[in-house]
Amino acid sequence: DADVTQTPRNRITKTGKRIMLECSQTKGHDRMYWYRQDPGLGLRLIYYSFDVKDINKGEISDGYSVSRQAQAKFSLSLESAIPNQTALYFCATSVPSGDTDTQYFGPGTRLTVL
Amino acid sequence: RKEVEQDPGPFNVPEGATVAFNCTYSNSASQSFFWYRQDCRKEPKLLMSVYSSGNEDGRFTAQLNRASQYISLLIRDSKLSDSATYLCVVSGGSNYKLTFGKGTLLTVNP
Image (tube, rainbow over all chains, first blue to last red; front, side, top):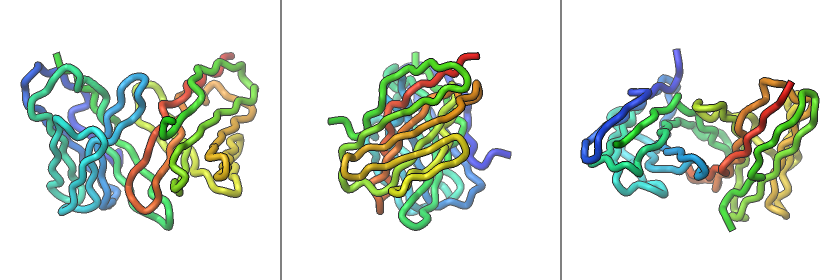
């Protein structure tokens, strides 16, 4: 079984709809992240959480919110989806080791907003 | 200057070729450096960390030059299975933040 899972894997929705993307992990990592990837722009950080009580904005948090329901679960919500939120969304987890912090990614959710 | 800048590519090479990817970063306080590999429509996966002394893992060699703020990845004896996008990734150190380059697409041809 995959260590980091995301649901749904694909989603098509309409402008204005609220949508939630879910991420679960069995790695036991405290740190979790949400990224989006757009062609030509690379991965950009939306939100991150270092533990259940810690939530932080990334570089492109506008239009998104998150919930850390448990150490193993981190959900991303689009309150009112718009077409430019069409992208590939990745969840990631990590645990620091020394001066490094390797991130492990889920398989991604392909979101299309019409 | 972009935070992490990579060769734009794409690179098309024959099997067995040696290929080098270059990457520069703008934040001199960066402390951790990585190369990730991403197959088409899949998640990024860690290929290797990059250490100041340089490091090698089989056919892959990574180098870091802190003075020039430059990272490289060398792939020797390219295989068809090496075809992927290679992402240069830099971390600011004590915080979370990974900054990703846009990636360089490599296609290894038979």
